[in-house]
Each structure stands twice: as structure tokens, then as C-alpha cells.
Amino acid sequence: MDVLLANPRSFCSGVDRAIAIVEQALESFGAPVYVYHEIVHNNVVLGALSGKGAHFITSLDEAPNGAVLVFNAHGVPQRIMREAEHRGMRVFDATCPLVNKVHHEVVRHRAQGREVILVGQAKHDEIIGTMGQVEGGVHVVETVADVARVTVQDPLRVAWATQTTLSLDEAAELVGAIRARFPDAVGPKTDDVCYASQNRQSAVKMMAPKCDVIIVVGSVQSHNTGRLAAVAEEHGARAYRVDRAEQVDPAWLVGAARVGVTAGASAPPQLVNDVVAMLKAAGATRVHELDGPEEKVTFPMPKGMRPMRSSFSALGRSGLAMSSQMRLGA
Ligand code: SF4
Image (cartoon, rainbow, N blue to C red):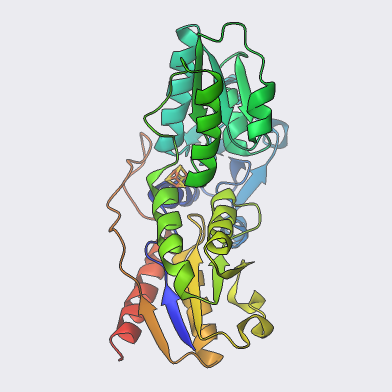
């Protein structure tokens, strides 16, 4: 059995920065640090940060006035920001700058009198946060049928935007339906799918036809991880999602000559290394890291915080060195 490693995979800059913000807040102010909703959608990360004193809350009522509070990477509605300020909380905003970019687009369109059709999952934190940047006038669509049902006041004054973690094909289909129904609609050049989602999906598209099975590391609530599994299946591989290596069922590997491994943008690199180690223990003899684009995107930390990477990222770097050695046959 051979193992192929998708490239790139695992952490993106926005996730690494968000986790680093919580870690630095804990270091500077001590526990507890309150985090509004899941900082990123990964259960291993959430468990580790909880162990260090982070409290994940779903309402500001769960934190005392004046507490240290971090907003998650997916963004929060404006009313939560106002409420935190009203309660005298010390706030650090870990919203990914690429999500903020979508917020700004929606605010600009509304200020210019357009209604916005927002492509994404209605219940996802990112969509709730984006809708909450303005007072009404945003219609969320998940399917082409939803696009057909949208009612707007003026079909000539329509704009659209998308969730950052959609699959490229899914985004293209829905944007096509919006453009067909509202030919004057304005929006980004193609969509708002971020570089990290695009790169990870492209890597899986390239890898899937070479694989019998693909293990996708990431939690069930991670939308971009789910898209990676869907892309793998669409391109001919059986895909399985796991949070940790121990969840890989040996029965999945029976008869597989090539097993691909990738990870969603919220899954720490070390978890991928653990899966590779598990596959080697199960009989894999060779590990090939596929070629892929080098990601150089970095985002500045919020005001008052020093530049740093998350501790998960540091662990993963040593793990990647191990993968390289395996690739060279060491
Ligand atoms: Fe930002 Fe994209 Fe990462 Fe989400 S997946 S945190 S939008 S870079």
C-alpha cells in the first residue's frame, strides 16, 4: 500500500492566526479567556484550548462583564460586537481577514441600495456573521431552487457574495443561476471562495483519481473539510472523514493499493502525521508528498498582540520534516 499526501492540506493562515490569538490572550491575561462560539471547527483544537482555560460560549450571558473575549475565525454579527463593548469586555477579534472582506462587500452593496444574495449554509457561523453586518436585505441561498425562490424589490439592484469555504463547483453553479436570473447582478469576479479552500480542493481533485481511498482529517462541523470529502468522492475515490488517526477503520483499507490523505483548513498538521504513522503501521511502505502551490499568505495579529504562530502549527512543522524524510526514503 502506498500513501499519497495532498499538497497543500491542513491549517490555513486564518485558522492558525485565530488559534494563536486565543493562546496569546491566555498567556497575557491568564485563564479564563472566553471565546464566542468555536474558535475554529476542529474538536482536537477545541479540546486542547479548553484544557488551557478557554471557555467556548454561545451567548455573552455566559461570561462576566469585563471578561477577556475572543471572536471566532468565522466572524460575528455587529450586534454581538456592540453588546461586548456595552459589557466592558476586552475583545480580540479573530475573524479571518478574508471573511472580513466579504463583510465589507455586503456592507458596501447595502449602502449602495442593492439587495444581496448570499450563497452559503444558512446555519453556518460565517453566514450568520455576514448577514449580521447589515440590517436586512440579505437573502441566503443554498441551492439553485433557492435562487429561483428569491424575491427582491428591484431586480436591477441586486448583488451577490459567497461563503469562503464552498466548493468551487458548487459556487459556480449557484453564481451561474443568480446571473441567469438577475443579469444585472454585481459581485466578485468569480466568487469569494478563499485561497485555502481553493488550493485544498484542487489538490484533492488532482489526487483522487490516483487513489482508491482518501482519508480526510477534520471535524464533522467543518464545512471546508466536508467539501474536501465531497470533491474526493466526485473524482472517483472513497472518502472517509476522521478527527483522529484512531478513528481510521482498517476495513476501509482492505484491497486499497493507494490511500490518499488530506486535511481541512482547521485540522492541525500533526493529526495528518498521526494518520500517516497509523497507515505505516497498517502496512504502507511508501509515502509520496504530491507537488502543490506554496502558500505564503499571512495575516497580521490584532492590535496589541505580537506576531506569532499557534502551538499546533509548530508541532506540525516538525511532523512535516518527518514526511519529507519518508519521501526521500530515509
Ligand atoms: Fe480564512 Fe479561508 Fe482559512 Fe476560512 S478557510 S479561516 S476564510 S483562509
